[in-house]
Amino acid sequence: MYRTCLLKCLKPARNHLPSSSACSTFSTSTMSLFKHKNAKRIEGLDKNVWVEFTKLAAEPGVVNLGQGFPDLPPPSYVREALATAAAGDNFMLNQYTRGFGHPPLVKALADLYGHVCGRSIDPYKDIVVTVGGYGSLSHSILGLVDEGDEVIIIQPFFDCYEPMVKMAGGVPVFISLKPPQERAVGDVGDSGDWVLDRDELASKFNCRTKAIIINTPNNPLGKIFKKEELQVMADLCIQHDVLCISDEVYEWLVFSGHKHVKIATLPGMWERTITIGSAGKAFSVTGWKLGWSVGPEHLIKHLQTVQQNTVYTCCTAIQEAVAQGIRKERSRLKEQDCYFTLLAHELEAKRDRMAQLLLAAGMKPVIPEGGYFMIADISAKDVDLSKMEGDEPYDNKFVKWMIKNKQLAAIPVTSFISDQAKSLYEKYVRFCFIKQDSTLDSAEAILKNWK
Image (cartoon, rainbow, N blue to C red):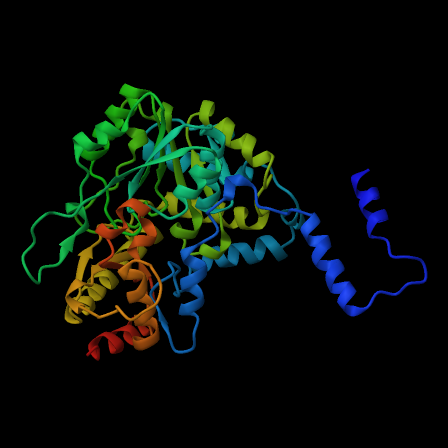
């Protein structure tokens, strides 16, 4: 009725053709009548670091060590499996598959994670396959966090955690990993030395706490939480009846001398933990956007509800290819030719090279224990950015200055920090080292000539 009345009011007189100015007025007035305002749940969440800095890094001649994607080839057999799935004789692989996960894939995942976790996992009840790790995070938060629920987020954190919690109506509660107070001049740092204060962590838990989100290995820091650290979190979760959303997409990228422990394997934690994995990180195929959540049926069923009422299902051919990849690597998990092992070894050499390049350029790298990112303290560069416009953290300005003046792209670490704590981390930037040697060669040339 409202639309009919509105059209009658706006209908021009018969045989009267409005001028161009009248059309302009008509357009403006019409738009003012329709208040197409954003939903409150996304208020203030429109800014995104990847949109801004990816655009800057795309400028001609810029060496991109910012965005976290490999520029080296994935294993040939998963690409061949995808080609066969899409163009092979089984044309039904081009149609919808089971909404909560392609049967061959969930069976392969149940076998793999059952082995790793030392328990039986039901492929149809304990797993949901999603659109990337992002999808798993989103489903977990939308399916389990209610209006007013508090969610503890350990920072630095992957930047989507905070807006996802807010969109679900939850309240983010932050706690910071902090570097050691003293470090010898010129020394490199170790991500394992960044720790949580146990008393502070305990103070974050209360009757309103619904969940804690952990990320191990951590992006951007590269810290792998030790079993003792995870046990502290587990004890608090059990004491306060809190869920754990464990983002473990870099689970296979663990360097020498370190071990990845799943918090879901600790006593009393399987029943309250969602573990998130990623095909993009496991097989270096980030563009495939395929992830999964593993956990107990009484939690996973809520993620499945979100799935069936949003994206419904994921690409069948990609799931088929990843299923073949998972089965292949599961069969040689403890062998040296396992892709997960080979990739970690290759990245460890790249990590060490990246650290030496940053150190030689006058930065102080923090050596990651896992993943494919490295943060560096840029304080010693002492670049005067006071004339740059904008009220933003120093690291934001530094990265923009570096892209423009040095043709080298990185990501400011404050992008992974809450507003209240940005000033404590604004002298760090993040570099990605899962790059071809030729890309790292170009970065080396820039860093060696830094004046």
